[in-house]
Amino acid sequence: MKCPAGASRRSSICWNLWLTLKGRALPWDQLWSPIATSISGVAYSDSDIRELLTEAAPYLLESVEDGRSVYRLFHEALAEYLRGSAQSREKHRRMANALRYSVARSSDGGPDWLKSHPYVRRYLAIHAAEGGTLDELAIDPLSLVTADPAGLKLVLAQCSSEKARRWSAVYSIASDDLSDDLGERVSCPHLAAFKVRELPLADAIAALPVPRRWLARASNGRRITPHWSLEGHSSDVSSVAVGQRQSRAVIVSGSTTRPCGCGIWRRWSRWAPP
Image (cartoon, rainbow, N blue to C red; front, side, top):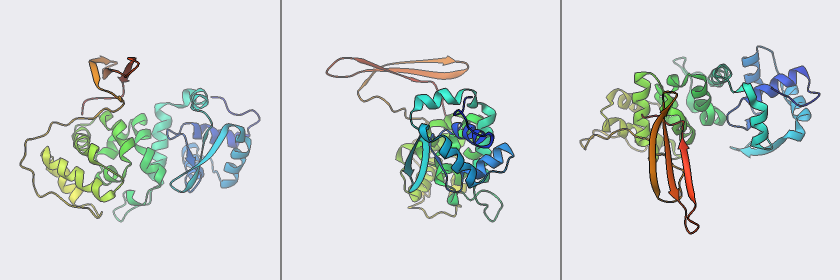
C-alpha cells in the first residue's frame, strides 16, 4: 500500500488503517485514535491524528455526518488505488472487533448498542461481513434493530451459521418497512418473526429494553417465504439470469430505458438466498 510522500511512521500507520474503512469517511470524534491503537498495538493520540490530517491534506475532503466532522479521500478512484491489499479479510476482522469494543458495556457485560457511535451503527456490519464475523451480530437482536438498515441489508445474506441465516431471513422480510424510527425497527422484525414462526427471535425482540411502536401478539396469515428486495433499476426489468460463481449465487438483470431505448444491466454478485 502506498502512503503520501514524506508521511511519518506513526501517521503512515494511521493512514493505512483509515484506508481500510468501508465507510470511506472516518470521524475523529471518540473513534479514530482508539481504533488505531486497538488494531496496531501502538498508542495513538489526537496529536497523531492532527499530524496525519496535516500531511494528507491534499488528498482529503472534510464533510459532516450526524453533526460530526468526517474525512474522506477526495475521489473514490484514489481510495481504491491506495487501498490495494488493505482490503484483506484479517484487516476487516480486526476493524470489526475494534468497532465492537468501542461500544459501551451494558449491565450484562455485552455491547450496549443503543450507545454506539453513528459510524458503528452504519458500518460495523459491513466490516464484519468482510472479516467473516457477521454471524455474531446477526444473532444479537439489539444489534439488528439498532444498526442502520441500509448497510445491514447489503450484507446479511452473507451469514453462514444456521441460526444467523434464519434470523437474517426474518430481517429480510421486515427490511422494506424499516425507517430511521427505532421503535419501528423493533416492531417490524417482531411481526416478521411471527410470520415465519421464528418464535425465539420474536421473544428476544419483545424483551429488548427499547421503546417500540407496537408489538404483534400472533400472526395467522399465510407463512411468508423469506426474500431480499434488489433495488437498482429505474424502469421495468425485462430479463433475469441466475447462476453461480465461486459457489455464490449471482443474478444478472436487464432493463430498457426510455426514450433512448438503451439497455441497463445490473450484476448482483454479493447477493445470496436468505
